[in-house]
Picture 1 (cartoon, helix red, strand yellow):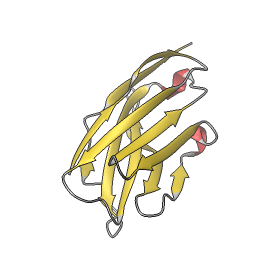
Picture 2: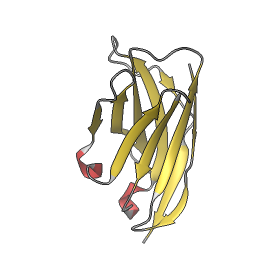
Picture 3: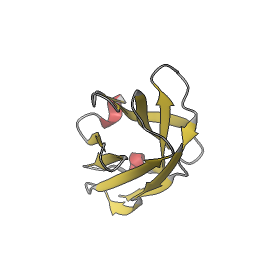
Picture 4: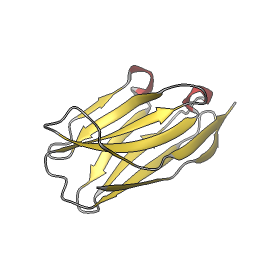
Length: 118
């Protein structure tokens, strides 16, 4: 599995960005796709997840109502729409994938930097 994240950049507080994660290397039936982030000096943490088959989503509490995860099965791409961005959203964002039968994300993208200025 190869994951290629893109779409990061510098944005002012209150602005929006859309991250993309292009996935390849296999079919993603029965897979779970996710976004994680790692702020400077902090551990990598979960942001959002979506099931490939049904599009079922889940979010970390601090991004609920502001971020939306989605997937385009025809393009093998997962998106993270981020609205009303805050300085505390500044981080490197990583996409990840796992089999729905596994609890471990074994495939990771290279990360894309999001910087939110106040």
